[in-house]
Every structure is written in structure tokens, then in C-alpha cells.
Image (cartoon, rainbow, N blue to C red; front, side, top):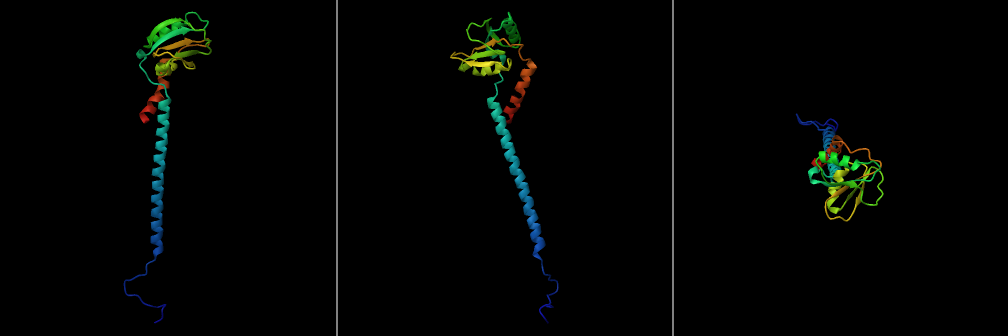
Length: 177
């Protein structure tokens, strides 16, 4: 018998390793794709959480208006504006300590100005939701009192719906942290 016609014992077949290797390669490639997606999704979730936390930390606090004490001053040419604004703020729950014309010689531009000390920074950030576009002026006062000064371009306070809409993304960002 020649080598080419060598006989094998009955029932023994020569195995080809190529199909098994291809199957294992496809299986390994599938596992790699699955793990790639898992790790990519985790990275995206971590990025979204970090972004939400940065939004929440930079956002104004949501305070109870009854914990915020204000002085409302008029620095515009419109007579009676301080009284009008103070009444609206009191209806919304704020504590208004004083209503008057602006006692300082500071020139107020735009819609208005918020004056506060270090202790009133959170309260001023919250009040700014009600007077969007107001400039902030930090001073040396030791209490949490905030002065809301009405400027010459004042047209009105933000509505309760506008304030709630401004606070809504903040609440969802805080819950994501």
C-alpha cells in the first residue's frame, strides 16, 4: 500500500481545525463587542452624572420664600414701583423689611440690582430667579438680608411659572447626583 491510500481504522475521521477556530474567533469577537458596549455605556452614564452634578452645584438653591428677608428699593424714574414690587413679593411669601427709594448714590442700570453679603449669597441667588437679568453686588454686610433694587429697565418680576420652570431642571439634576 502506498502512503496516499493509507487506510484509517473504521470510524476514525480526520478532523479539520479550521471550522472550530472560525467559530471560536466569532465567539470571541461577539464577547468583545458586548464588553465594549458595556464599558462605553458606563462611561456615558458617569459623564452624564458628572454633568448633572456640576449643574446642580452651580444652580441657585430652591428656598422657601418665607426664609428670605428683603428690602425693596426703587432706583428708577417710575414712582411707586418699590411698593408695587414689594406687594407682589409679599404675596409670594417673601418677608419685606423695608420699602423705599434707593438710599445709596450707586447708579443702577438694567432691570435692577441685588445687594447682599456673604451670608445672603444663597438668598440672592434665589431672588435672582424672580428678577432675571439683575446684576449682583456683594457687600460687607454680615446678615442674610438682600436688597432688591429696581432699575430703569424693569418691566416686571418673573411669574411663578417661570420661576418653577427655572428650578425644574435643577431638581432633576440634583436627583441624578
